[in-house]
Length: 171
Image (tube, rainbow, N blue to C red; front, side):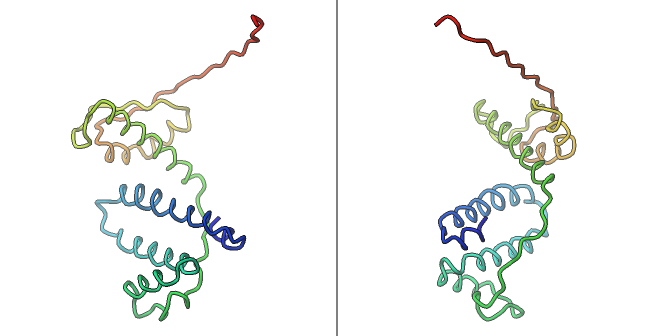
């Protein structure tokens, strides 16, 4: 979407997409889930480098200054000499799973906030209500939620929603 916005000269839309990627996907999700791992530095450096390359047509002076500070010997002399990064194949299923994980985690953290229980205090159990897809995702990635939300046990329970539509003939 970012490259489409550059082609159509709607830079504000592209910048918004890039901002959402950096703030939501990288900062609030990736960094939060990988805090205790040691190999995060390489990924963050790659994200920074490619973000600077992508932003160079929009704010060239800032990107050049930042690129010069983080440049290694094998990098080109200028950010403007770098090839635009190409997007690779993405795993749509994994992205959907982590969207559900993020939603469940946001719900648990919102409930903690509403109950005025800080994140440092462990909770014995958290129950998440949802469909079968959410239950499968929680079985697969529940340990991430437990670690991040400081929950000892996590359970997923089905919720059944029924709708009844009736005409309002009283009017």
